[in-house]
Every structure is written in structure tokens, then in C-alpha cells.
Length: 134
Image (cartoon, rainbow, N blue to C red):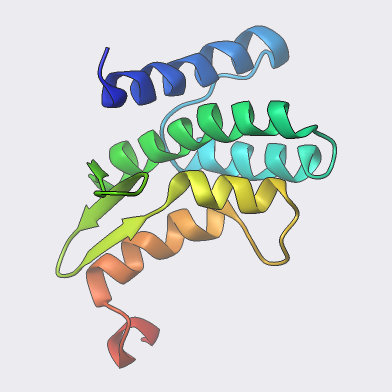
């Protein structure tokens, strides 16, 4: 199994596990990211290091697939780094989905997968200059 196949399998595992454990039907869209954002807030500060690493891996994969499906992104392996999701419109934006999930789980102030989901498309369409603020 390739790394990309493992990422996609982890995303499906997230959906299946949440359905079995919490009776929640997740989809790969903004609504799913809303649920994920709330879930990560509830878990923040309550996991040991090894469990947190597993959550980052599985939920980061799920978050990435939400961007792939919701924004037409694609998984990209950055040499010497991790996998990111790239969204291309007028501009190209690379999203470190695993890093964002890790920061939100760690309780870093202002970190939110939902806000990143929303801003990624805006930045891909308008860039980071003056036009992005309009």
C-alpha cells in the first residue's frame, strides 16, 4: 500500500470509527470539518502523546480528504517533508493538514481546522495581497 493509499484508508477509518462510536455520519465536506473542529476542541489536552499521534494521523487524513473533496484539492508529497493538500485556483495554496490538527489538539490559541478549511479556498482564489481582503 502506498502512502497516499494509507492516507485515504485512514480517512475512511475516521468516518467508520465516528459512525460506530458516536453514531455520526461524516462526509468529506464543510459540515464534516465543523464536526471535526468541535471534536478536536473537546479532545484538546486530554490525550497522551501516543494516542494524540494516532488522532493526528487519522483525523489529519480525514481533514485532508475534506479539502480534496470540498475544494478540488490534491494530495502532494513535499520532498523531505510531510504530505500536504494543494488547492489550485488563480493561486496555489498548500495546506499542512496534519500540522493543523496537531496544533488544534495541543490547544494552540487560535488554531482551527474549520477556519483553515474556509481560508484555503479564499487564498487560492484571491491570493494573499490586497485582493484577498475584499
